Image (tube, rainbow, N blue to C red; front, side, top):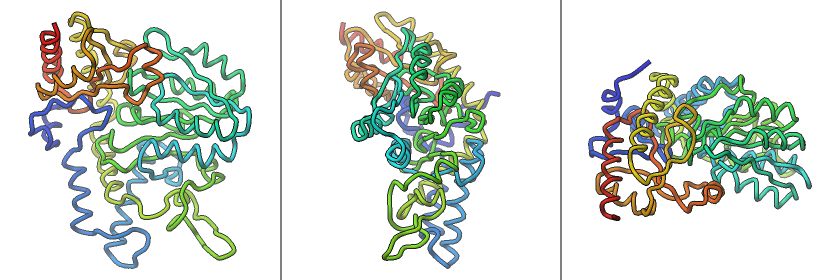
Length: 402
């Protein structure tokens, strides 16, 4: 089902500036509905949650907890108790590494990652492996950026304790066969964490159907504010995990002799949480639900196909990754003789915003034998005409560097 992109864009005040924003994989723009939900909190019932026996606090708590129910529905989780608020994907993965990994991993245990991973799904496991004496093994890609499933199968034969991988690559856009990989990993006895930073905003997921143990994502990449994200965890797994942070609100009882923790998910939500941001994330869930994730995916696929076709007509330009049907709304490329940072600077003169660099995926850049790529990424508000402006800017850069 198609939607009216111009009508969508009218909800986003930032487009009144004239910017051609092709960096949504980095962070998305926010519609008025999200901004207004946060403004309403600050101007009409600003107060702390769970702690005040007065009307403003009760209203704030109701709005805050309603986001948890929306996240449950978005993910098709079994219970709101499986929805933990975090600051974003990075904190969610670190929470699992600390609360589950430090309790269950021992010397010699195997952690399986992939070469496509964002640093947030690498560094916590490197730290944990160094601390526990565990070992990391990596699944490589083929020449089109697809994960080597033969290597993955071989690593599963070594009975890993944990398998952690992204649903969609942030650097190449590759859509991994996450359901099949999860099923294979679970059959091998592994716990499975899926990095949904790119998957949740652009494709969604049914965590019960997929069967993963953990799924982490950020609000700011899916029309919501920065500072709020979600960690899904199977309830029985969360209940036996240790807390990540300790302090106010994550306790049931504190005595000099010791502390009894609150039930999940509160056990993992210490201190004053980002209340306005969580409320804004709830409005983002509403907005995406109104569009329908199948429509979001269809629009991105159309934009990606158009971009790949347009880029193929630019000489001396290399695109990395699989065909449009196997990638999200992300296109990484290199223009011969022009560093990605120089290209991004010239595109900025055309009011085009792209990302240039290693995209927090340096092991992948090493695998591709490049120091950086230029990356254009699309979302619900992207128009074909914006891709045309980017192409004009690339050709301008080529004239400058000729």
